Amino acid sequence: MRNLLLPPIVTLVSIAAMFALDRLWPGTRLWSGPLAALGWVAVLGGLVMSQWHAALFRRLGTNLNTFGEPGSLTTAGLFGQTRNPIYLGFVIMVLGVGIVLGSVTPWVVAVGFVVGVDVGYVRYEERRMRAAFGGEYEEYCRRVRRWV
Image 1 (tube, rainbow, N blue to C red):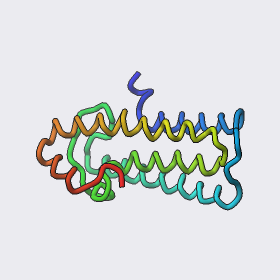
Image 2: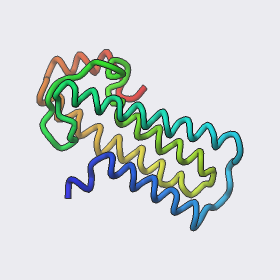
Image 3: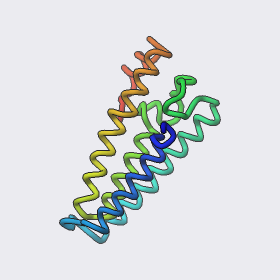
């Protein structure tokens, strides 16, 4: 069951739900045209950000699985500016899809996704990191913001 709750899967399911809502019950059209192109830039940027940092974890040999034991305290890459660049990339992707679609109903999923990631993944991982790395992680948290 936990494999179904892995962040990349939840991200893809959320994006699929957004497309479905836009197609079936779009509600009010918020915008169209050039702004949609900006949304594609966000989707691509978020994808690159999340995948680059996932590859960084693999290169460093640290655990990437949300539900596994923390492997190491990584501060390389954007981890020096945000404690969650992989999740931030997922969030940017989902928000980008909302911009691309341009209707109101997909934003229900987007907002739920952002809250779910923060409460369900980020806070959970922070507790695990505190338990694993103690004062070193606390110092990191004082220097680097949770999101941006």
